[in-house]
Length: 121
Image (tube, rainbow, N blue to C red; front, side):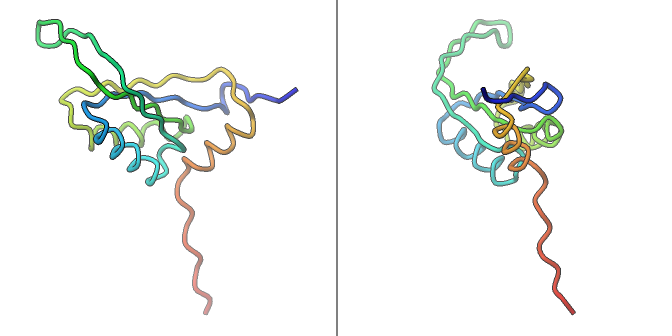
């Protein structure tokens, strides 16, 4: 039987949506490169929502990000900085359990970048 981690050490799932696949890919790559998310998944979706008093329906792209809970504030700030929408949907969902080794990987890969080695001398 595999072990799962308790909620406090688990993976945070963060969702946002973008208008185009290219926008979703660009934002996903940026967030993973900046180590704010360990991984990103992109899916085509259909959204129906109320905006400025009218019901809208649009094709969008869902960006699902896996990160460590303590990286949420920095991840949210980066999404806000780079997102093209006036009011981006940014929703974080805690996971109740995750495979321990996967949660560890997410924490390592979404953690602050390691310092470069110091020169001897």
